[in-house]
Image (tube, rainbow, N blue to C red):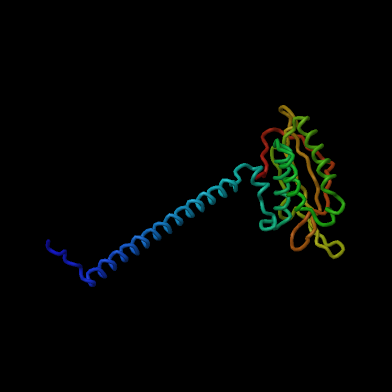
Amino acid sequence: MAAVPSRSKKTVDKSMEFVAKKRRSIATFSFVICLIAVAAVGGYYQVMKHQRMQDEVKTPTTELEKLIAKDLEIGYPETPTEVMKLWGRYNQCIYNTSVTDEEFTELLSQLRKMYSSDLLEVNSEDAQREKLKSEVEQFKDDKKKIVSYSAETGASVRYKTINDRECAYITISYFMNTGGRSYAKTFQDFILVRQNDRWKILGFRDATRTEAADNTETGDSE
């Protein structure tokens, strides 16, 4: 029987080298595939996380949501008139809108950011909350509604220096539906003090005058 020819050592070495390279290529390919898979999974979770954050951070759309979300540290009104317009805007929302206890507290907190330190000291938030809530409930029981509001502007705003403090005297008026076809205009007088370069409410009172009004009047509410 003829002998089987043996493979040369060189041929065997080349075969082993080829197999080794093939295994390294497969390993490298598998590693790259794993990296791609990990990156894809990580990217998916990042997208989902971003989506969840967008869902959680809802863009304010209603007047109530806008007023609660308003950053008064950044966008504080610059003049006494603008302060009073914002004050009227908050009060119109508080008195006209049905809100939860949490929303009511948040609105009140925003109002208090317009108070001077002097007024905050003599008006605790808890006491003010109870008083305001009672007034709002009575207002709604009487079927009243704030239709619009208007703040004095220009030369109507009086400025005085009292005890080295710059103060502004200004009146805000409310045009209200007092039930059915009846309308009236009420007034509030305010004193504002310049505190840390911002006009803050030092005190206010209901003015003694109240004017009857017809339903054709429009106001400056915003």
